[in-house]
Length: 126
Image 1: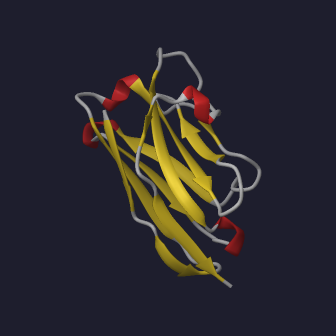
Image 2: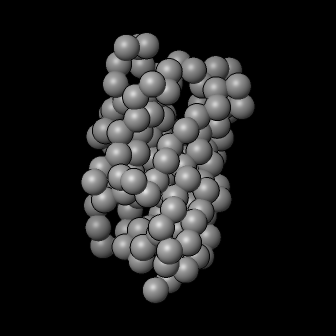
Image 3: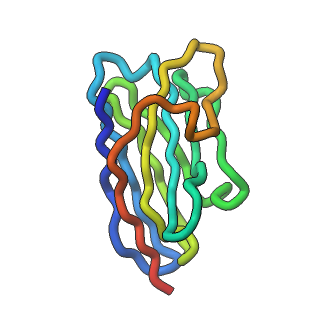
């Protein structure tokens, strides 16, 4: 299983970016997918996670109402729409995947994930 995160870049505060995580796998529908980020000098933290069916999505308070996670299983891709970006959103963003059962909620801890992408840099200028 290989994950490719892309879509990062430099944006002004208040702007938007859309990240994508393309997963090289026969069927993404068996996997929950999460996005994490790590800013310099800080620990990696969850940004959002989506269950394999897409019916459950989690957001921490820091991004709730600004970020939207979605998935397209037909394209084996998960999207993270980021709006109203703030300088504190600056970080390297990683996507991760974990095979789960259908009824399982999306994992929220990085140690729960088995497969990781290489990360994409998001920089928000003030």
